[in-house]
Length: 333
Image 1 (cartoon, rainbow, N blue to C red):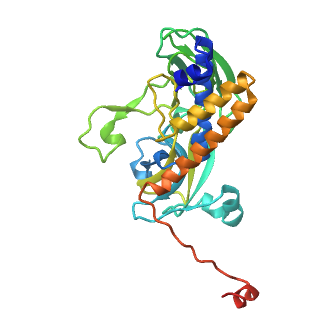
Image 2: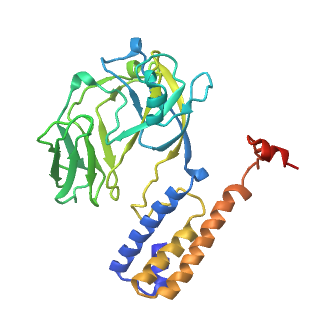
């Protein structure tokens, strides 16, 4: 796509090509976030440890969603009961007892996200130093900001890494937020605690699986990702038994970091080309031509949205209106 745009506008130098790639990545993020595309919807299982089954002593009040989850759409219990989504503040005002009660979960609320993923929140481990490293030997003096979650503390520092060598934070953290600039390779930041437990204990339903599972908090950032916020969900009441919840979610966008990467959304290429060409024409101060390309991009976006319904198994539904006012009811035809 970038090569096509550069050839069309007559700018094929390396600087223009890199600029167009940046335009495409930004527009792709914008388009991906603007709509709940069918290609972005996924399903996964998340596990809530029961009191008697916990492999560690820990106090769990929420579930941290794995990396692919960018937004939770619906949650279903093993009994095929759909949990109700409640806004956290409203639930606190209406039913404050649900925050401390235990039992079968009937509601869920989106809570403040965390910067690192963890499945087992090990309170006994406390805070730990975090190590940072890249998978590319070409990494050069990359600054990584590590900031503790506000619920835990106020520690914050900048760690510099080069090559594949590891760098350790001078302060200790538990659930930090991690951010960086453009990097050459994939960056990993994780707790320095290398503890592990057998798969058979961590996942009792996978008896045939051997090996161990690392449970330390960690985050992985690709070249163009500046940070990741992991969605956290609170259950009301808090389950006491080990429960596998089915989660329907909007998946996280996979960035177009490499020339071989392709968009997750089918048919978005024409829209990205139109937007990228408009951005490049604006850079060249050809505003009238850029405006025409914006119109083309809007047309391509509208075409994509119609493809979601017109070219797939889509059922139109008629939702009946409910009239609460007697005046309106008397005047109905």
